[in-house]
Image 1 (tube, helix red, strand yellow):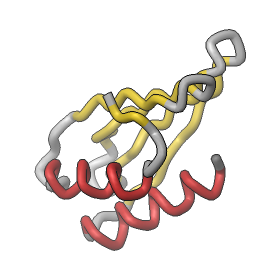
Image 2 (cartoon, rainbow, N blue to C red):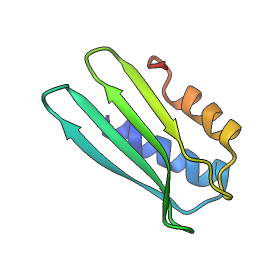
Image 3 (cartoon, one colour):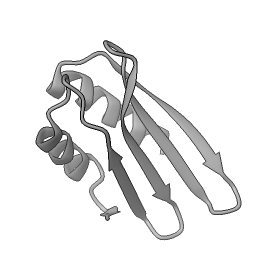
Length: 87
């Protein structure tokens, strides 16, 4: 998972041209990892990804900001999360 997250944030930085970072929370009860993607230029979360590890499913929640091209972000997610069902 760590390699996946590293590749994902690098793609966001390069393809979207924004300074960004991610933060993770793990919920052992649900076997879920929640990832928050941050736009460091305006210090706002622009996407939350809930990864359900047992089901190989990810639920994205988008928060449009002026710096983020949402269609391009969705394209990045589809490419980098190959093998995951995006709902």
